[in-house]
Length: 445
Image (cartoon, rainbow, N blue to C red):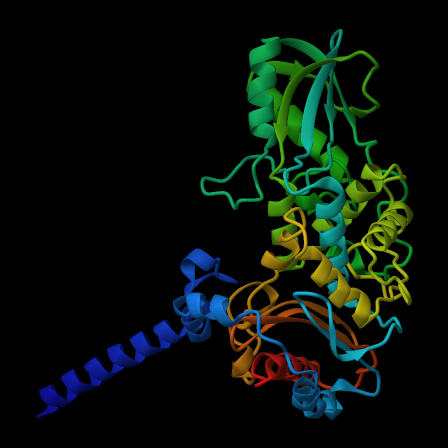
């Protein structure tokens, strides 16, 4: 009898584990950190969406009821955990038609700022642009030139993520093949970017705890570089050259000589891949690097100020409202930033209109599945798999902006923002935001 009971318990345990796995509840236990999509089980709603894709496409052109949507979100938007300052906008993502909320008052956006940075990067640079890290030679001097690759590493791992395509070890291999053995001076040039590497609009303590000093030349995103990412990268490159028989002196910072001959190059991942990663992971360093590339592309200084001006210019050229907009960085770390919900939803709609910019939408993490919303929507299951959104979080500040898909495959671009919630449990505020998004996704509109 005891043996029979044990067998039954084992079978029940296996069945229970299988059920949890298929539901996706074990995702967070399977991986170290957030599971990449290829290793995680999708929420049931995502699998249902895939199974019914043809049906969704067939009815995806149906109208969205504005009145019903307003009624659906009225209760969630009134939740006390959102505090006294709530901004909200929802529009039909297919044509930008207003559905609920609106207004152009700027609120502190936190990391939803990255939606604007991602869109502008794709719009200005194009999805296929890559950034080159180069070595040039002038006489017996080799110069390592930073090209603003946000994911340059010293050595590529055996199974690198898609954003890591360039490394200093490969660059050193190519240099050694070109110059052979010999003795050289080594300089490094990180002059692509201008202005301060740390924003004066950031709070004390952000560097290096949440962001590294921004540089056009670094490895591993400047982490552990002791405040000088470019020098740390140059030191690593010198070691790699010496390992390959190329004798170099300790590196010195200097601009590349005019007329120097290119010796070797490695290139970053495409901008579309970079943007998708920065949105999924909310990467601060990558956002600030892209902020500077946007500025350079429109002829401005590659600095915090240049990036802010370039993003505004890009939005205005796409007829996106910039009323209430005040940018001081590309990551959203600055509490001086202001963005209206209207600007966010109009940016999302604009992103869908051009193949160049659609990675803004496809890069948004899926609720309950990956990125910064992997553990969200547990108490708002209508949003699981049906909401793709960028989060934003600072002390007393929370925001969520993205696309909620209604029954029938009809997309709604939404943004909900609060910036006066100090003293409220942040988890409660996040759950209240999730409820707003889930109310949209589950609306019978």
